[in-house]
Length: 213
Ligand code: BEZ
Image (tube, rainbow, N blue to C red; front, side, top):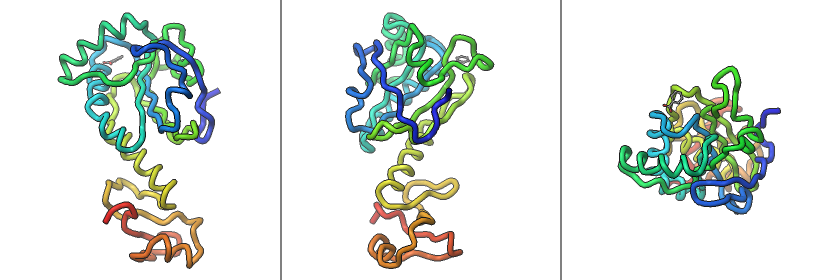
């Protein structure tokens, strides 16, 4: 049974490149990006893990911890990490789950037999601080993910949680956002959006991004 938005992220204990991970304990109250890749020592995965390492400060700014996963052993991960560091000019600074027995892959439905037999697909789970799954994205093995897009989705989700706004198509940080349709109370609208908002249609109300000056 695949996981749906709003489901509790399954807890697990598994080996990783940084030692055993007790997932909920490791996550604490942070948000988490858990992402799977097909296998160690593969070209696209090498670029993805390097990109993630370089973006770690951006994830941290948002209170997000990152963790990767593939069906490989700790020894394999530890053999591959120096290649990532060397070729991507970075230092892998997050754990890679060594899911040698597919325990986590099965919990998160990461093996799609019509796609790759025995290898995890490129799935991303964005999990909030209450361990709820807030977004999932799945790419084929041949397409490296856009990690800026993953950050953009986190920004959007956190804006919704904190300010009751949603983000329109192709929104970028700093652009206008839309007020969630459920928010109708005039007093609350005034309090939340003191700089005002534009009513394009009663259901389409634009306002400046609330956490920007
Ligand atoms: C890669 O990471 O480069 C890759 C892995 C599996 C299939 C195709 C590409």
